[in-house]
Length: 145
Image (cartoon, rainbow, N blue to C red; front, side, top):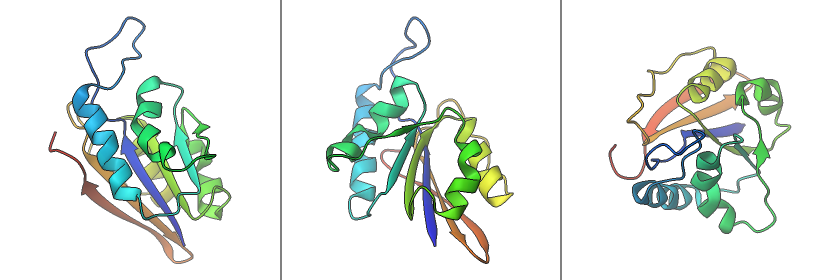
């Protein structure tokens, strides 16, 4: 069984010049909440985009796992076959964006999730991949956004 935990990056500060804002104070609290949610899991791989906000979202998770380096992939759906095959491990955390998280769900499960609104940062999608198929469960974490 493969478990993929997919989140949109945490809350961001006002857009920065160049379009790569850092997390806001609320986003840093949400990133800490994500680390709390996954603290008892053996996370094999962490996937982030090339943008700062995804790396900052998983930073508290990585702080608790010395030596675990994130895999940079701007379109995590292209890794769907590797994820499904277990090539990235049994538990994979993906920090993406409002467009890439639904694309990953579609690629892995053939299913759609409700669009992630620009003001929504608290969604956590858990995908469970087995020989029988892929289950999708939508959860929330951290403060309500």
